[in-house]
Length: 359
Image (cartoon, rainbow, N blue to C red; front, side, top):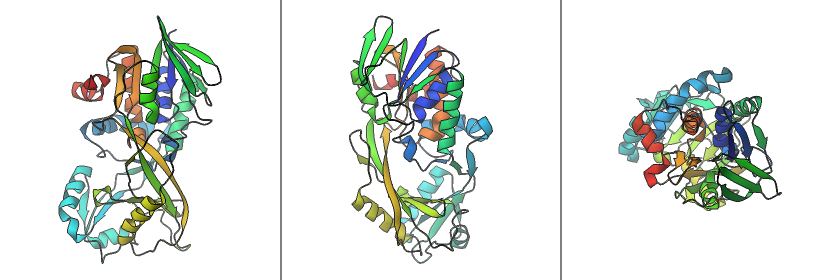
């Protein structure tokens, strides 16, 4: 049986392992001591069919059935609302149309989101079918499937060296473990270009960006469980309920080097101030804060498939903020290309995802 080595244990690597394990001998190497430590473990994931550019939307649509049904599904009702002040009417209309939101009255918006400040906000739009995505459950479902098919998943296995062999690849970890495979899958997230360079291949200019989050307290008598995900126009901030509190993000996108990201206090303060303008409930206490990395290729589409310089090196990277919602279709495409099968996605989408687009 042919062997595949996967570098990276976030949603990209775990889902790829699950898809490849029925057909290949799979070993996944994750540098941290747990799976989904960086971007995948710090996501406020939602599933919204209209979120992203045309290529992302095609992957969303191809992933929907899996999210709804596989292993009992990972989605639950949430809804999405966008609000805007009177000065942002044009941007509000454009963003609402792009996301497939229907304009609603401010009275309807206040019923859905009781802390809405109707003195500062003049526009609202909503769609009911936006859903929470249980990121931990999706990771565990894919990991369980991969292991059941014989995949080896090794954490604490930080890669220190990659060598091209005549028949494949040799990967050495910092602990001195040596792994060999016929295929090498680069699912290293923010470190995807680093892995490519280690393998002697050209980087694709995949850039990590910091995204900060704060968890804020609400009064004990206020239950946000049924509130929607709420987005400020222009994605200037967003919030969603979280176990009796709210997660609020300034929707920052600061380019950084690959790292264990942390939130910037000033960025959080500015984002919370933008959020505060839209609500009547003051921000009194921050319960926690954190940051993750969203890593994008230059055109903001994922990079999936064989490297144009070496077809045995496959990219599964550039997920940006779309990794969880696109994972079922992205991993299936990766497996189809690795196994020489005909993908279900249309030719235009395949070209838009291929690493060869940067050649």
